[in-house]
Image (cartoon, rainbow, N blue to C red):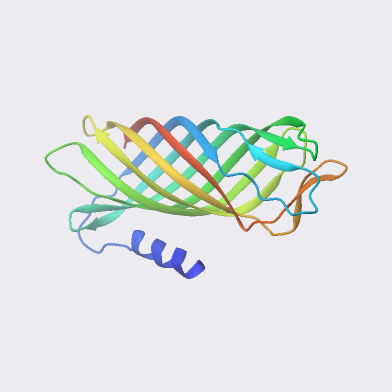
Length: 206
């Protein structure tokens, strides 16, 4: 898996030695998110889930170069999803705790340029950290990786619209107890937890 990630990022962020003009793009987007359930071990006192929630995201892209007319960009991706952590005890009783999930990622995108239109589809990959911050329990920070795809539409040389979809995989330590407050509420038994995001918003070039 690590070799696959390194291989993907290498080709996405491979510097181009052709002539290029350095430029920045910033996007602010909002949308929705959904996720898989946490897989708990048999020793866990609770089953955990998260509700779908609102997501706000910020991206900062720097042009790295061109490859066959298409654009290679570095990307900083910051996002926050507001959701509820759902707890189900052995009797099926449900309680919730508000939880923010924050992402701090860096990676790259490969943008397919269509010169006759302002449409620019892209794919990308990022690496970084996921920070779980429930209101009633201790926070958790784990390594994560993301895969992105989307579409940019440029109205002119400076302003545009961006539609972005992401699948983010967060590494979980198997048999680790999480979300503690005097005692830990669950013990996970999975290696990966997935969240899916769809956002859209304004893009500015400078």
